[in-house]
Amino acid sequence: MDGDEEFFDAVTGFDSDKSPGGFSEANPRVTTVVHTGASTCNGAGKAGERPPQENGVQRRRTSLPAPMSTRSDFSVWSILKRCIGLELSKITMPIAFNEPLSFLQRITEYMEHVHLVHRACRLPQPLERMQCVAAFAVSAVASQWERTGKPFNPLLGETYELVREDLGFRFICEQVSHHPPVSAFHSEGLQQDFLFHGSIYPKLRFWGKSVEAEPRGTITLELLRHSEAYTWTNPTCCVHNVIIGKLWIEQYGTVEILNHRTGDKCVLHFKPCGLFGKELHRVEGHIQDKNRRKLSIIYGKWTEGLWGIDPVAYESFRKQERRGELPRQSQPDSSAERADSDVADAEPEVQETVQVIPGSQLLWRVNARPPNSAQMYNFTSFTVSLNELQTGMEKILAPTDCRLRPDIRGMEDGNMDLASQEKERLEEKQREARRERAREGAEWQTRWFRQGRNPHTGTPDWLYAGGYFERDFSGCPDIY
Image (cartoon, rainbow, N blue to C red; front, side, top):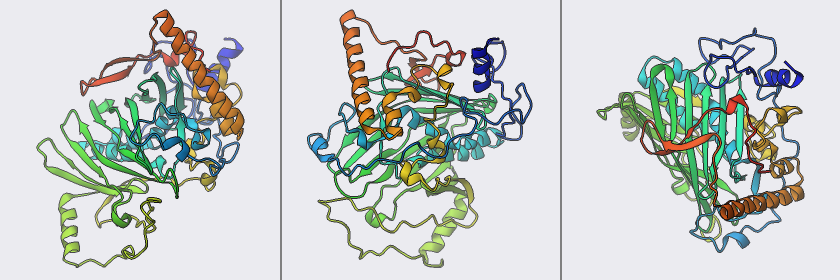
């Protein structure tokens, strides 16, 4: 084995000789104990030989190279005033309104609370598994709280991979279409316990004072040991005060999670803000069986946590509440002045925490953010590490990986002029490549995903074609 192969094996944990056996294209060789449940990863090597690694990063960073730049010198109104009611995917925005991540990396943030998936794999009862899956679905949007920066639009053919041995998964994502923009992803557990996949094509619209993002596309989670598949779509995200005032975010809409084996369904209502912010960030819903009998009530906030309780206990509590038999909670001051509706959408000043009903079970609680998060685009600790690129990683990453994008790298390093220049160059290079294909009558060919139908819903979807982790990147396009 030569030096490059040794380096490849060391930083990825995969055998470069493509030895037979294992989960998929390459056999995971986990040399540390990965606690994802009662058992540990069965791989070559012994615990303690080296620390958990993420694509060669032995110790993940805790801050960005440069603090967030100011947006006060830019007028978004000069750009958006002609776009009211229109779809925004084709509109070029100043780079100051971005955050130094690709949308593909944003999708990868679904995996921050992957421990909920591992827990679901271990639980014996379908109801308990559905509770964990519901918590996982809600946790996927938790990182968006106070994240008002726009991720970079992925270039056609752009990819992102993440291997987290310490968290027991690997993940690959590809931008499979540019107009309309479609991002396809596939993740698998290193203990052969789950598959998580889907395709997302967000629709962004400007409504005068707010920007609404509707994340179209089906998300599928398969618990392999239980032969179960769950599908759902994410709620709508709305960013308020994009013209003037303090930016703030809410999620709203109904999310239905279906267990295709048992027929159980979880219905979650992400509440819109409402008057005086009483419903801001709230999530309420229930789990029902195939006969529509309620099995559990679920409530909480997507910014804080989620709880489950027996329906009988829940109804008893609500009856006591209506009869005034419970201690009164402080209420928002209804006399508080709201900002002029012609100026800004006021973010509610009073945001009550979740009132936990006696007898409730905690399903999930949000991770605390790092103390310097406000200077890092309000990133979580998980998010801070996503674009990290250490010496030598270029040898194993696909040349289309987001970490190699010079505009995102420039912004992360605080060089906004370079980032803006590189963004324009990459966009023009993409347009020229599209014109060249048109002249030759050629169609774009995706590399790692193919069009097909979701095996559980029958709806159109992008499915992982396999082969990425064999790491033959010889045919990858030159997009940077």
